[in-house]
Structure formats: structure tokens, C-alpha cells
Length: 402
Image (cartoon, rainbow, N blue to C red; front, side, top):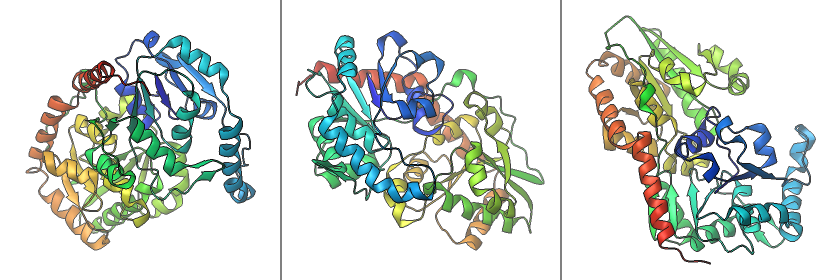
């Protein structure tokens, strides 16, 4: 059973796309998914798993999406969590969980609701095994409280009561171990897998006059400052050479930043379906990866290995990653020697390093080959699915009912 406030959606990007790829081996009849009706409506699961969902309503008060809503959101959150903590029973969903009788539950929270709800939905049920799966440190500096509890204590309780963990990176595990003073008994580092059966045909790289850099995916606040630095560096570099930066992203992100990015000569390439994105990226000369330099997103940059890393490797183009030296993305790239890291937020220096990287792009194709090798050896569907299935099987064999 998957208990998450993110859905199994192949084209939603980020955590939803990763979850879909990770659990794509499952026969739908053997999996039950539980999520909020709000997330289910906003990010509908892919057809393969659509009928396997049951949903709950969490929000009693839903603030309007305007200035007034921003003012009342803190009270609404406090009230919603307090109400559900005191009065939430969820009898119908509990009955369906009991009937399904899962051997193991993967609890993958993408926000506070995803941590709060396992305690409500599993209360009073003889659950055999729960495995927490964290992909981001969204908990960093979160101070959400309600009558009878707070989010930091809930996260600690989830990790302490269930010592078999799945994490997006070992860096994230270390962060949570230190913060919550708990050490996992077993740990699986699980990245986004890719299907190589439809890997794009990539033409051999040739030196040319015009170079295209591409970025695919969301532009959340924990990405944007670094993306903007790259865009500024590319614009400055255009005085020396013909280079362009294309953004492939859901339309909402382009709308949010369009005015600023158009001034930096960033082109919008549209929102490309996941099944087509690797072919599109393979037409670029290099692929941009970013992680925030901002202190408020320190933990996110340090702990979260981005989903697009393995997708970029599949596209067989040079990865250029801009972010702080402590970035999990950079740790991965340096470990596997599969890309180039730019570790400064000084625009002049970024432009200079991009110029040097493009000057040596033919020699840098060895990094692309290294990335393809590590992809084949570690991050195919077959490899990652086997790791997960083995981990779950071992967890179930060592059941301790709490």
C-alpha cells in the first residue's frame, strides 16, 4: 500500500513521476493507494493506477487563493490539523485498508499532511510493516503546530517507530538522523529509475558554432535563484558566442517568471510529456541542473537528489550543474564523474565557466559516457525495481508489529 500526498502520475514531474517510475512494476490489483482528494484532483494518477485509489478530505477550511487567503492560511492550517486530530475518524478508509490487508505500507510524505495522516489512518489497525520514504527535507524550519501536536514531533515519531527507511539520498538520511536523533536499522537509497527500452537515438557530438542548453522540469523557489544565475551567465556569454537556453516546463512556471526570463533571452519550449522529454533533451548540447544557493533552502540542496538527474543521463548529453558545493546533485556528479559542476553564484564567473565548458565540450563527452555507464549499472527500471522488491521482502520477513 502506498500512503502519500503525491499521486502515481507519469507526467506530473518531481515526486509523482518518481513514484510512478518506482512502482511501475506493480500489478495494479496488488497495490492500494491512499491520498487526499485535493491532490487526486490536482494531479490525477496515470490511468494504470487510477482505479486503485481511495481518497480522504483533509481541509475543513480552504482559504481563497487571494490576498485574504494568505492572511487566514495560518489559522486555517491550525484549525484543519486540530480538527482532524481531535475529530478525524476516517472509518470508511480504515475499513478498506483492513479489507486490503497490506503486507507493507510505504509512507511517502510530500508535506505535513503526508506525515499527519498515517497516524490517523493506521490507528487501531494491526499493520505489519510501515516504511517511511522521504524525497525532500520539506520539514526544514517548518513550525506547524495544532491542538495536541506539531509536525516535527510527528516526523520524529514516524522515523522512530519504523526503522526501515527509504531515502532519495544518503545525505538526506544523515540530515534526518542528526535532527531527530534517530538512526535507521535498515536504509535503502532509492533514485528515480529510467526505462532504457525507449532510450533516444543520439547523434555523435560534433563541434559547431551554435550551442543549445536545456533545462527540463519545475522551477520551484528552491531552483529558481540558481536557474536565474545560469540564465544571466548565458546572456552575458552571448556577447562572445552563439548560445541559447531553453526551458521545458509546465506552463505555470513559465507564466510566473516569463517577464524576467524573456529579458534574459530564455526561450520557452513548452511542457513536454514525459514519454517524449528524453528525445527532446537529446537534441540539446548540454543539460542544466540547478540547486539553490539560498540559506532558506540549504537543507533541500544538501539532501535532495533531483529526479531529472537520471533522466538527463538517459538523454546522453553533458550535464552542467550550478549550485553550492554541498549540493546532493554535485556529490552524485563528482562520485560518478558524469557532469560538470559550477559552484559559484557570481554571474561573471558563471559566464566564464560556461565559456570554458563549451570550449572543451568535445573532451567532456567522456563524462557523458560515464553517466551512461552508471545509468545502465544502477538506475534502470530492472535494477531499481529489484532493489526495492528485495528491500520490501526483507522488511516483511523481519516484521515487528507495533
